[in-house]
Image (tube, rainbow, N blue to C red; front, side, top):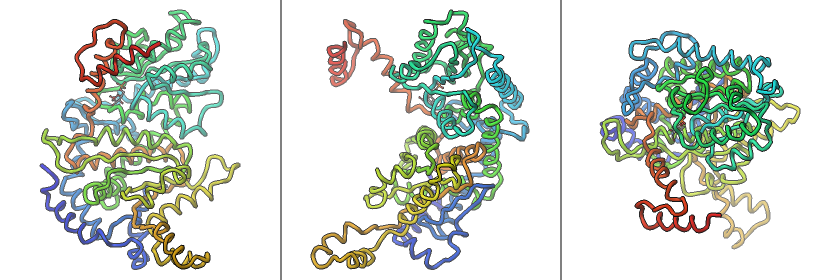
Length: 545
Ligand code: F6P
């Protein structure tokens, strides 16, 4: 079923024609309660969505569309473990990983919670051993450096969380992430490390990912320059669903932390894929992250749709993507420690909703997932905000604003926050030609000089943004934020009638790369390719040293 035929979608289409020229500035002037009307809190987290191109009628219609696609039924299906990942025949249960209520969650008639809890328990035992020194390196020294080797969901989420939770890091413990098969990544990481005190976590759901296995093999070779093969067990652990491949690689399966096929890669930081987080911060902090995720799950599952943060954010996204024709969504955290947050969101959103086929296998004739991008504020202001303010595209922005810093000694927070708020205000208000004229006159401009400069200084405004505001970036808050975006992506996938939980689009490149590797060998017969690829292979062979 295409959403284009749903009466609520068509009603939004008509509403869009009426609303597209309505100015937010005027709406704010007319309604002193606009902030109260268009903001939601969940615990300590506030979503202010009043600076969007909406009226109450818009929100009513968006919520009616969410109801029409039976969003609440889909939410229940997901939480209850139905196999909603239809192309892989799998349940989608990242919510079970952070199910702190411990209520049973059934998959194929079996409660998954005992297995989830057993792995959490195993992670805790292991982390405690590493931290208290009962797990030592081969020469009897304490582990000081964790190197996570993984890619995609087995890297981005844990790396982002470790950066963000740096203030919670255990003294003396450092964490590193190696993902790229470019040897530079591994080489520049290990060149400063001591194999006696380094623990590698090889994180791969499938344990067949070329980049991860290549990096892990090279890491083992590096280790074996000093350690003996028997010492590998003390320095390499694995996180995977695939015990056979883990054993084949040479890691003792006692040192393997299990995950399950119902955990999607980009949703896996809550599972044992989060082991580097727990090793870095301690299991108690990791559990606080899970608590935050669970809190957002409860909000998502129980709050009425108009008061439901992921639903409201998801539907606002649909409003811009499908009616205003927006192509991208910026996520701009005003917190330097969230530098990798947009990267994680990129995989989460684009791998989930970058689809052109609907759940029934038919081609889609409407837009789905946007391009997700962003970097921390204020840096982004001095790079790409020009285009967001005065460019020709409509780019909705999420501003993520923690009120308090973990580093109060360096008290820049007022300046940071003022900038975040100012950007959202400027995007909404803009600056009219009359306002620019008055400013220029004030500055002494007149005549043709004034007229020439004036249009360049006009800001059209009416550009939408959300503000997510919270007291401090605690583990619980971080858990809430990540879970919020996961659910937002899910809501949009339901509206677009796509399976948000497979990722076939990454397979073709992997297949072709495997075929090209032998072609790059000197003297090898080059297999069949287009002429461009063949010539590039030949050139690479010539240029190779
Ligand atoms: O390339 C896509 C992908 O399958 C992601 O979905 C996944 O997060 C990543 O590769 C890594 O996969 P694995 O954990 O199996 O190594």
